[in-house]
Length: 429
Image 1 (cartoon, one colour):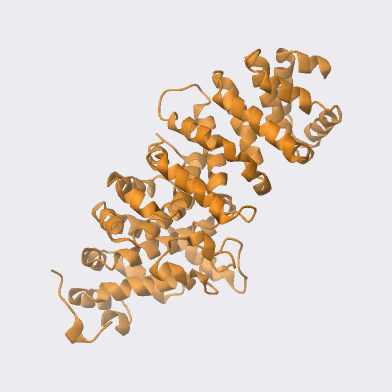
Image 2 (image 1 turned 120 degrees about the vertical axis):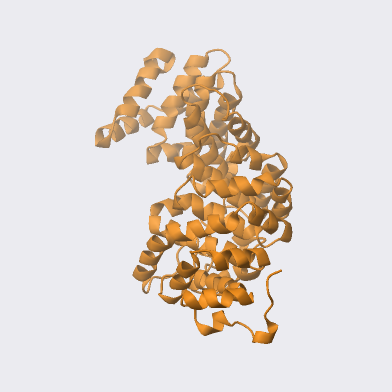
């Protein structure tokens, strides 16, 4: 092993061997390397990138492979000083001139970020991560997409709510990202898909929790259109986070109008249509299941919904559906039906907020999906907050006299077809 540590070529062979290995044999080899106490030497090579960039690259790749083993992760986390040293070495590689070294450094930080207790120690990486993501749209080397994915994953961990950090610390980072133009950068990631798109959507959602975020997002009218485009580019996890942003923004007059003009009503109805079946299946299976970590019904749920207004605040009551803005993105990936349920909840919440605008009432009343909203309400496929969102939305739709017959034709109950006395009704205009 001493020979391998001294020779970059041998160290690179070791990286390839560890990467290709699997099962008990690979785990055993990593444990044997741990006994040789090679961590200080690997860090020394990473820190000496100016003298030998190839050795630093190989050392970073080796450590990124090794840290996937629980005992190696515990070794890196043995003391705060050692963890800080690893983070500093990775940060040096990310800021260096050797492009290939950035990928293993970012992947190593991503592995550390999956340990919530370690995330606060990644704070110094924030500006560098944003700079890396800003470069993602241009031409790059073969691992560019992997680098962007890792960087976005670490950024997500720095922004998402966590029980290991006070909310004010998260809010400072979110505000810093907003001020640095991260919204446009994340929305502009060219061809983003899969984990990269999900992390970008999650970062945008968490940034929207910062005080004043609505004003920042409304400062560029193109943001509304770009957000709505994301709804058709990703799966239910992306839909959950992006529709959560629209729910947040639709609570303020200017962003709500921008969303409406950008086509939010048909886009959100598309989310409802795409997620209703899966969310309904999950609703039918829930039965007596208790609160799930990340639900807005949990004790700490309200803190993660900073800035949520109107019906969104009802999530603190027992039995409400989760809202994407509280739980980490990883939790949405663990249960696809849960992601669909969150997307449905957020989509109907955004429609409810938009339905306070007469133009949105008209669009909803004239939409073929009006019947779908009524069916979700009446046939048990919506519960908790989603049910409240649908009731509020359809109630508002019924306030336009011309929508009464349409609601009746869709099978809506009488109290929604005629939500107020006839003399209170007004025609659109």
